[in-house]
Image (cartoon, rainbow, N blue to C red; front, side, top):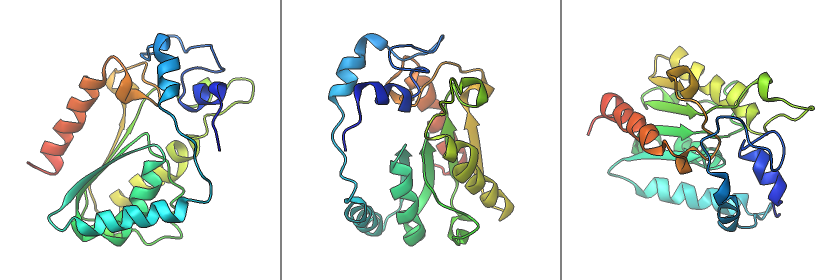
Length: 198
């Protein structure tokens, strides 16, 4: 499966339609061609193989690990974390997606693992234009938000960080590549020091 030049523009929330940037966006649109060169095809039949690799890696981390996952990486990371919770010191979901259903999946192993969920800008109904809705909205509105609330309900430690609510505007789904990426990294590092330790 190849994502088209135009499709990636909207899936990364760079703008409401291909070639049209969101006002105030921090993404350097002059680098979009270079950004697209970093993409590779996806095989829709490879999920089981990818998940097995995640599971094996998480299982091998006996000294403990801090998980940081972006986008689809959240799907595989959470599944692996459920099976290897004893090896995990903390989980950071950066704009992550996952169809994990807390009403159908026992997530009690996450009660003792600190969680951080990070989301950028251009989310919500105000950015639904001509019927278009960001494909990752199901996680931001549903599955990841539901997991956050479930962890808190269980007495666990979970932080929901929406950057615009902190006064940090303009970040897209590619926030790690934008002009304030160091600022976001500092926020994550500060959270690690406070919730996980050194």
